[in-house]
View 1: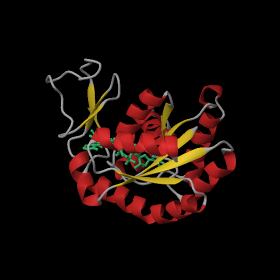
View 2: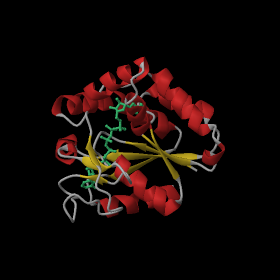
View 3: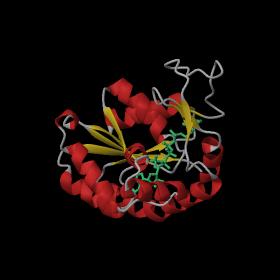
View 4: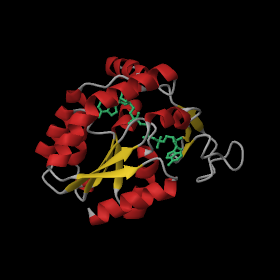
Length: 211
Ligand code: AP5
């Protein structure tokens, strides 16, 4: 089963993907994480990507489609996975519909955009296990990850006000058409992403299991 997470920046897609992936035994594919990884390279592509990411601009459809198609073709992903951060344009949604012939569900993380700034402010993650923190989800012991006890953390270059505004604007420009596309195909479930993390998880599990 393929489960697609759609939602604005900071709505909790990455947080929930990690939880649901562990609970349901589904792999987690994040186009944002993959692009950030490539952007670290000193190659021309890496430098170009890093510019786009820092500004909060969308990376071009062909490149992201190619990355996703490569994952879909891998045998270890044939039983499905959580796709976090894709599609972000109608063209990407159409591409996925064309290349993925199995069943899939789309979860829309609905949240008032005013709340996003507070979530993304001060966000950092553990470099060892990926756990994501902010002022609501804090370290119990300073300098030590609650989950894996690692001590390597990183902040994201795109968690600044200008980039966040661009990312929200881009999301709002595209989302209406994408929701229409999935509504017409009966793939869409909406969760209230403004609830506590564990309540959002319950809504997602119920949507995935019951449709
Ligand atoms: P990406 O990495 O996908 O970023 P994003 O969509 O902007 O989403 P975020 O990672 O910021 O937020 P999230 O929803 O995962 O929230 P999180 O769980 O961290 O993409 C980055 C960039 O890559 C894009 O801007 C674009 O440039 C490029 N890109 C990626 N995919 C692309 C594509 N398909 N096409 C073109 N370009 C693409 O949660 C946020 C914070 O809130 C955390 O600190 C967390 O602890 C906390 N939190 C989570 N849930 C809750 C809750 N219920 N209550 C309180 N706090 C919570």
